[in-house]
Length: 252
Image (cartoon, rainbow, N blue to C red; front, top):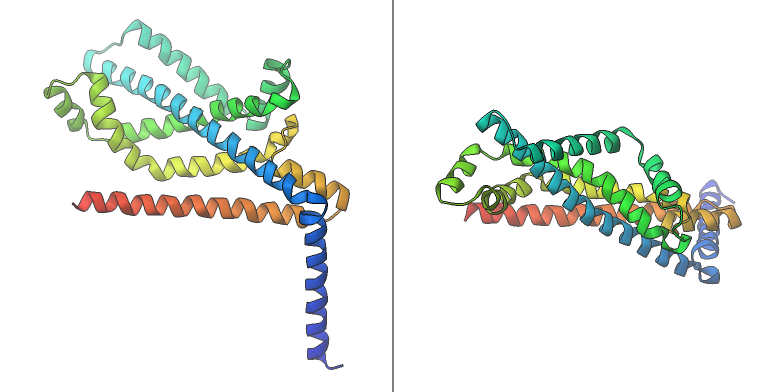
């Protein structure tokens, strides 16, 4: 047998071995169904946490910007805003200063210790949402401050209240500026959910680890790596399409 024939024989043999391992780890015994259910849990946690994070982030960012604007205009701010600002600072300091895994474990085994394990997915959603909100708040605050102050003054001169000016004029422009950063935060959030297995939530990473412990194969890990990569590429593709559409509307 020549060297070339031996090379191709080895390639075919490796492909056959890979195919058998793929079948054994992903398809056999309906294991693909476990991956599908795990992927559903991963997406559910990501979507729920992203929505909660955006809501929390907007509230915290608006509070801090309002305090800064009042101090700049009047030299002081309303006592209620001052209290809310202190709460926001404490929230940002604690969440951004501690690891996500520690926050998740505290939420599951300290704060919500009485929650049954089949409901832990909601605890994970809450923990990731609170964590994401701290980072989204800083992103949105930076986006609001990047909007020219003349936009706010123009809105107020038209008779709009401060809340209306923020909602109708400032925030839409800020969101357009911070859209890439928000999508990047969503991508980070998606990948961070891989640790929910520590509180017995069956996401796609937990499922792959469970199957690998039975088959002793690296195929499940390689498979979920490809799944995460495809989802991230899809999110990046959607962002680029949205950015192109926004760019076209700017040129009109």
